[in-house]
Every structure is written in C-alpha cells, then in structure tokens.
Length: 202
Image 1 (cartoon, one colour):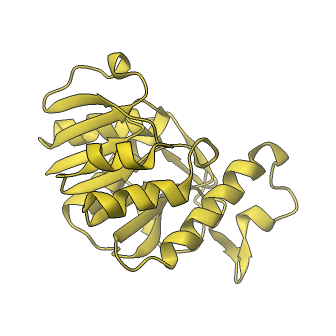
Image 2 (cartoon, helix red, strand yellow):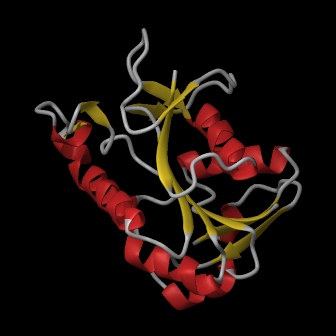
Image 3 (spheres, rainbow, N blue to C red):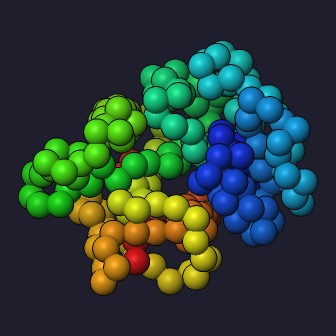
C-alpha cells in the first residue's frame, strides 16, 4: 500500500515506519526535519507542518491510507482530520492513548484518582480526539489505544487485542512500541475495526 505516516520519527512512529517498510509498503514519512528519517526501502521523507491544514492535505493526497503518530498536545485534531478529509484519502489510522480506556464500566483510566498529573493534558487531548472521530462520517477512521505502559521493548508478535477496556496481564497493563506497530500494520492490511477504537496489550 501507499501510506502517509505523520510523525514518522517519533517513538511510536519510528517503529511503525520500520514495520511498514519491512512489509514492503511504500511510505511517505511526514516530519518537520526530513533529514532525520532513516534510509529504508520504499520510504520517502517529506517536510510538512501538522498545523498547516492546506499544506498537509496536499502532501497526503494520493495515498491509500494516512497514519497519524503525533502527540495530541503538539497538534490540532480538528486540523489533522480536516486535512485528511480535504486530501481525499478515506482511511485514517490514529496512534491513540490509553487514558480513554475503561478500567470499570463507565470509568476511564483518565478519571481514576491516581492518574499522573504530568500526563493529564496529553491524555485529555487524546480522549477529545477520539470523541471527535466518533462524530466523523466521511473518513474511515481507526483509533488504536496502547496499554497503560507504552515504551521500547521487544518485537514478539504475541499480544492480545481488546475494544474499549484496558487490557491487563500478569505484569500489569503494557505493550512495546514494536508490538504495537505490528498490531497497527495488521489493521492497515486487514481492516477489522472500521470507525472504531481498539486496544493492544500483553
């Protein structure tokens, strides 16, 4: 597939870029500094500003799908979604957050008493982005939430998928960037969560 990846050099984005390249996809890596994009087969780096709606739409045009892997507080969800819509690309996958997942019926992780203050701004913005997507009718979107602990690790290929509930295992709620990238690439290739959120964890 011909995929546009916004935020291709970030923590999650770089793993997604490597996963897509290893599967033979053609990827446009959209970043602020194209010289930081690694040389990988089928990857072309392009400079764009996520806050420049019109400019971003032009770069996105002609792709089969768009993946957004940018921090919610460093972007404007309304502009991102409008750029995707204006580009004519119908498939839009978003690297989501865990905070909007439920830990009990009707109780989001974000709303639990011990949720760290340091992450509340980003978490709240991510939750608002999901609400925005759920009201979207023109774009075929998917929002993939990681588990609570989301960091560097192994590419094991062994994980579980869920829907709106936080996944927990014997080592808590966690997923590596590398295994997250597998789950996202799988969804890109074989869509199973059209206009929906799902989650991945061990």
